[in-house]
Length: 203
Image 1 (cartoon, rainbow, N blue to C red):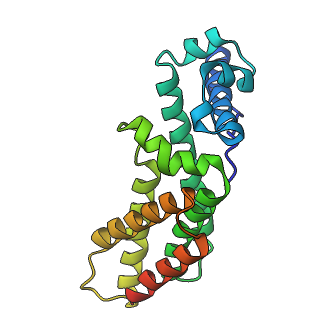
Image 2 (cartoon, helix red, strand yellow):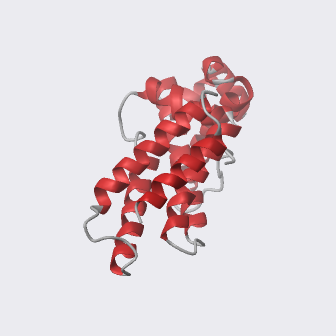
């Protein structure tokens, strides 16, 4: 999954658009530093350089400093994963493929970028809690539960299953597997095969 931030800002006054553009550019700078140098090398100076703004401008738009910027970057990744997963799931031929879209998106992202490690391992530990946490998991849980509910209505799954509970377990499995992949403790193909077995077991 690409981590480049969409910087086209529309709506609002010119001043508001410029402010949002600068915030977007700064978040892009955070992700650029993470992908090129790793989360441990993240500093205000490096972010400002990558974003093409001054240190003072960074603080003017993110008065909470590095913590606020990291949370914004984490949230940006979450929103992008949600959008890309939804796009892939929308083309799925059945409920199984719809569920697998969530695992594929996360496993691919975890395996291929330093931002994948940040999103699955170092970021959550740094952020702790807050609005940025749970964007991807929350949307994924909801989407999976809805897919399971549709399958039940179509007679493809047992009515004894509780979609919300199953969705919580599957999202937990995806997050744990993604953290292992990002840490090089697991292979993406093996984790996907295991997830497929979990999904097949629901039938």
